[in-house]
Image (tube, rainbow, N blue to C red; front, side, top):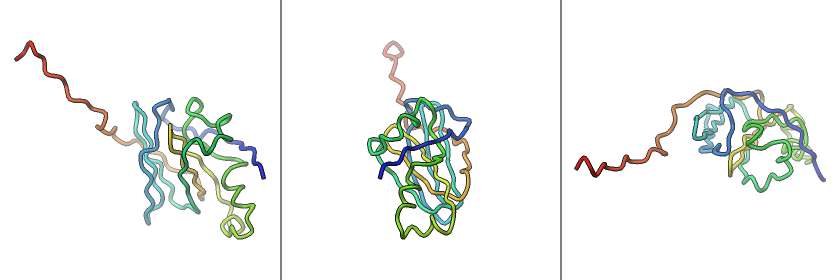
Length: 143
């Protein structure tokens, strides 16, 4: 069974570039939180209600790259042909029969997160992490 993915970009205030990465995925009683960052920004993607999520290497999602890539965006709504359609092809995918999950794909340079959700995520700005800060070299002339 081959699915042809169709997607639309979820508009955000955060411009995708080749440094965009998925840094953290956290499931709690408050929902699913995905931390995404680039060299220019850091954002929290929060889903209140989800039916499922998966994290895959970008190499396992090659069928998406004609429509989804970091040049076009980093957060996509999957209209058809994605994980949701694959799950709906199974007889025992109860969530797909009782509800109408909406699929989102968050694309990073390496990891990608597929989310089956109830509604659009809330995307908010986070203060940039300081992990990229390098120590300032000592000025030998000042010694």
